[in-house]
Image 1 (cartoon, rainbow, N blue to C red):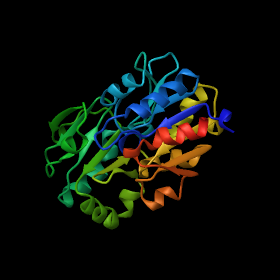
Image 2: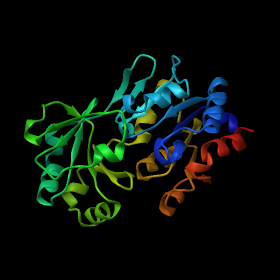
Image 3: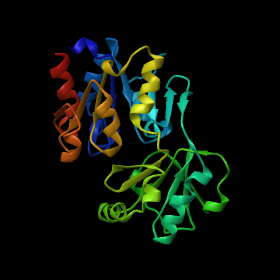
Image 4: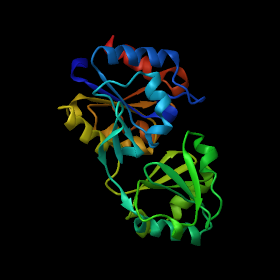
Length: 269
């Protein structure tokens, strides 16, 4: 069965990365060995490419057929050249609904294009920069001052309890106009309805003459659901919530126990 798997897609936070936001030596070793043997290794993240570039370099994913799925499937990048294979976006007016909701409910919001984060100063101050703790440019601006261009997503960063409460009272017009996912307990993302990691991976698989039968995915959170469901083998980390574990085909050890390496060693022997 293992020879069917040609591509391994990996979520980063709380999946491939440990609590210190590092790829362990064991995870690195196993993934490099598989990559050297012709298995595609693809990082699949909510972040932009520059915010995960050190992981791309650490795993030496710089060959002519190495790609990264970024912005939760909203963009697929060819690593060696930074060429865009696929992009899905919203115009600024597409985020007015969630901006107005945040303003009415004293909530923070950040809006991301495909290069930087706009922290909205006409709303409650956001702690997204501190929570994300990544190599990403942040610009302060009011919503009405933002340039009229393409944007990838909006982010609401607050305590897990606050976001639970927001989610439970959110009106249908918000729910129906965005793909809403929690990428971390303190981060809720508002994406174009068609954007998810499985959709980004589908474009990449097609480019590589593969399909979902050739795909193994690892994830732990809401923004991994579609790729866990779509893959021939969706593997969920032990640190994931029970509702996510039910979605995958299998589970592995948690992210601080080298769960990715543990599973791959067993699977590929």
